[in-house]
Amino acid sequence: MEAATQASASTVMQVAPETGEEALAPSSVPDVSVGVAPARRAPTAQVLAITGARGGLGVSALLLHLAWALSRAGRRVAMMDLDPAGGLDLLCGQAVLTGLRWADLPVEESAFRPGHLVGALPVWHAIPVLTGDVRGGPTSCADAVLEAMRAEHDVVLVDLPRGTPPPSEARVLLVTGLDLRSAVAAESLIPRLRGSQPGSRAPTVPGGPKGSTSGPRVWLVVRHRGEDVAAEDLELITGCPVLGRVPTDRVLTKRLALGEDPVRARSATRRAATALARELLARVLVAEAPDPVPAGRRSAGHERGSAPWPR
Image (tube, rainbow, N blue to C red; front, side, top):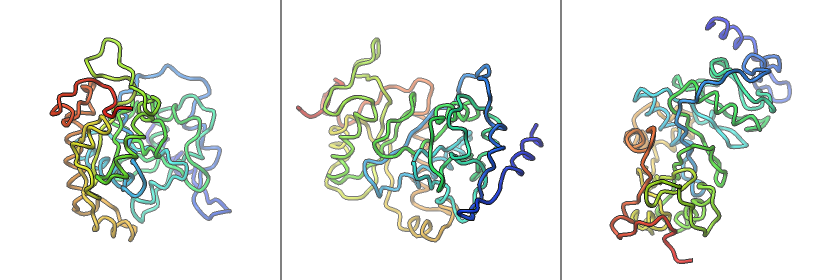
């Protein structure tokens, strides 16, 4: 079966005449899709969506470092890029990652063969990557693709465009700065990420613990850029706990500008991502993660799940 999959993957690549880039022949699609939905295996992977409160916070680079760190911790990891413009693979280094892109998948497909799909994806440090290219980004088959990827992995990391609702059952990391602009943006995004209306109280989960809310659970990752707002105040503003911190890394910025592999050598971001991965495995990527309670809220004596500001 492995030999057949490799043979199939080696014959689906051809050069697109318009761009000169490698593209996949339409005939390759039936190798990964199914005409009739088979008996489905229950998805096993946790889904972690990562997004930013605003642009310029290095969300995609952090996602790559987290994928690398979680893989080093023994987890089977995959990455999915939901940005319409794609480009996650361009941050992986100078090597061209060959394999399926979003545009190569049948738009209306409702089920995929997990092993065949994953085996045809580009690979970075043994981590499958699904992203877009000049032909386009994710399509309506994204849910089916995610289900197939979950069946083959322990964790699926999703690069989530700002303001886009996360996949169902996903945990969410919101990267934000400690400047006022980032804090305001984060506060406005939290209701969207949880599936509620801005300014409204998050609905309580029936039978859940006091303060628990429905919708995706959201944690904050603070990037040290601007110091207008303390981390504890940011927790109170957003109602979400800070899970980790990421430094502004000039070495990484230079490495990305040169087209180098971002995790090839030690860096401040790599150390921070390793620490963040440990926190994720202990507090977030578990079967039944407890609802997050911000440390700032605990210290202030607030126990209710309502918005921290009077509206």
